[in-house]
Length: 101
Length: 487
Image 1 (cartoon, each protein chain N blue to C red):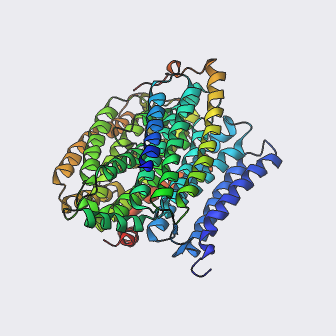
Image 2 (image 1 turned 30 degrees about the horizontal axis):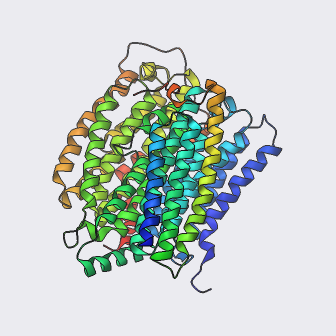
Image 3 (image 1 turned 180 degrees about the vertical axis):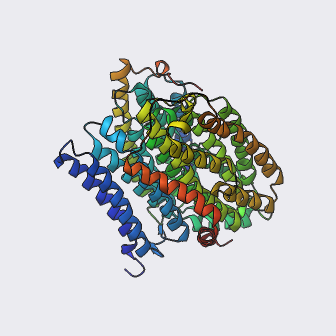
């Protein structure tokens, strides 16, 4: 039942990521939690590739692409965090609430 | 290798190269000469449309990239949305963007490339990359006014929610891959059926995957309860980008939904093998979208926010065709999206021009517009009436088809609810028209849109009116598009 252990690891990582996104107030903290979620899915892909479909490489290729995409997302995210800092002199997302309803 | 027709990728490759060309052109061009960039972007989109008409039909990379009728139909919508968004951007680009005009237009085109890949994807990896290629340029575009707090705030909100939803979607896709051992959507369907036949049940994994994929794509579609970002982002983003977001990105989500659910998981919507009826979940979400979108739109004071809630409601109507999951439903959805392109892009173009002139987005400041700029007000009226679904405009035909497909598939309660909420929606659309025509105020300014924006408005009005009066050619194409799923 080694596969279940990997899947459990991924599920725990994913849950930590979701929890972080929902509770963190620091914009960089939110970006880090998002990375955890992406990497949880990556572990899933690689695990399934090894145990469910060992003949192919689809899962691993998928994971490689996701790493690249997550990097691109983090770049844009950090750029926007920089803009936040310039405009608000801080990156606490609680203060960024001009628009409501 | 036989079977690889790489030339099918030429439209995408051209548009990608053109976006890079715009980046470079901006470096060399004189800063004052801002108009040429916009015209070049429009030209690139038009050339891509011509290339698309030459190269389509077939697949590339095995079954990964399907250049079929459905993809073709939606690619035309994406290109139309990009064309109209660029056309509406001229004033903003020359007045509010000083140093990065090339990137502004180039990123719109890059996002369009992503949508084109997404609409052709019949494989989860391609689908996911297309989705991200669509969204990442949009994050930048939404936050494009770097010193405008509204724009930066909406960019941050869009980024967090967008990345969160795509991570959820990715996790769902990974479970689908684990259950089936493949990422090809058609093979996935076959494998799921085999597992079902062998065990008599599918188990909780599939349910989890379906819920996560619905949530992930629901965020892109701004389907209730995943709509929270939409009003804020729509309000804060540059207005042409809001229009592009509400049409292009939404249409991309619709294609992705159709590819995964209506193509891949269709066997699980019928009674024969029904471990989970995703149709019911989506129907409930659609009804929530119609109710919440229309009711909340009633009390909006800002035209962009009002259109945001109206677009949430529109996606609710549109999903009726999707849950019907018949060829009539899909063709109705395609036609709906096609008309929505003209009406919604037109309405946002009006909002752009109006904001450029008066600096206001408030519905109240539209008072008396018909006296100072009658043609402009008439265009807005046409767009709003089409969104409300008044005959003989395109929106009426679209709503009629979607509702008919819903009744045919047995979702009568959903259609009745849609009709009731459509009546409510009349109020807030008519409110703007009332402001423009029956207000005693007479504004001092006169709005004269720049030439590209006039072209966009003309396309919008012509599309809504002509395809409303003579829907048959587009309906035939939409029916062709729906055939790719082989019901």
